[in-house]
Image (tube, rainbow over all chains, first blue to last red; front, top):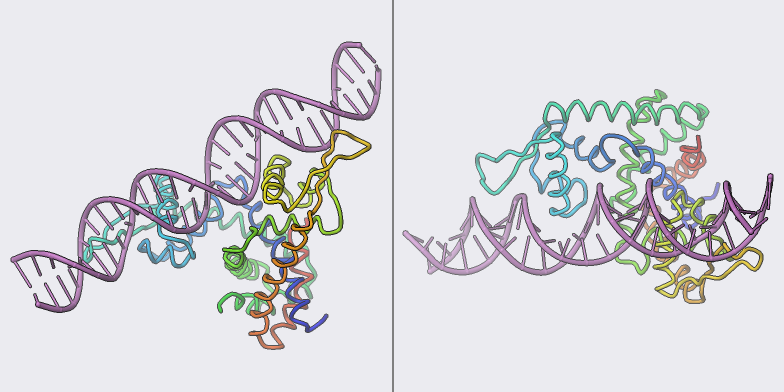
Length: 140
Length: 140
DNA sequence: CAACTAACTTAGCCTGGCTAATATTCCGGT
DNA sequence: ACCGGAATATTAGCCAGGCTAAGTTAGTTG
């Protein structure tokens, strides 16, 4: 248990690389991809504009356009217009989209919960304590 | 700070989604991609066979073939043959590949170290303690 | 030696990124 | 009133990186 940032960086980097793989395969075979699920989640509290979605997901606008196109083709979101500014397109969940979001969330959480349940209580505590620090990374 | 696995799952899932984004952009603009760096790292201790690399990186063989092709085109790895079994191809670092690996590792670690240095000592401790638990996730 | 199995590669498809180029629409200054 | 620049999106074309299916070559076994 060293305080050396270099060593910590090494270990953290290895663990995160592994978790990225895990997250990717966790959703394999589910009705929406990881990115699509993530975007649907952004729409849960109401309509959003394209730029806002692109920023939140740290993606260029054209990338978000393509994602939304696919979600729209799948009937999970609908495009609308801003009454005050004809340039902006709004995006919102359809009823089906909301259902799908909840279903996928249930499946994902059930999966993670199973893995967490396999840990000891001490390990879960350690994760809970470290979460805020983990969340802080990358904000600089 | 709840012990409820469901709540922990929710929060952890959100944080990890964010970190995935972070890792992706951290390597943007570097001379090798995240996957290539990862593969180069596997070769650090000597030649490996294709199947072994594919397994370690949780990827199908054809995917690894393509990765190695690119690394070979870039002059970072070289293919060889197993004297005992003509079916297997071995892969090893070239001198340039080893140099590149070390350079990228320095850059990546410097980046993560800067971020870790921005945390408090308590936060770094929390991360260090939670690392083993984090690493355990997804092994089931 | 024929048939099966193992190790790779090739081909073709998908998602998900990016930049550059193209509408549209809005806004500000003359 | 209008012209030019800024803002919002989309389209087109490229690349990385994943997958499956099919093909090739080499060992293994009955």
